[in-house]
Image (cartoon, helix red, strand yellow):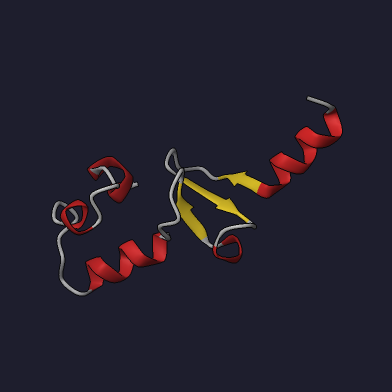
Length: 71
């Protein structure tokens, strides 16, 4: 892979300090998401704020692990 292509791909998906959270300009306008999904961190937080415990969130979003929710 050429250096220029690698730069472009790196610019598209930005790592964060969290293991499971990234920002991808191509997904949800760069809003933080769970890596490998289109699930926003905001969606998880809003679910939690509605009174759903972190342990229950993967029941409604079964593609997520509890570790991803806590991150």
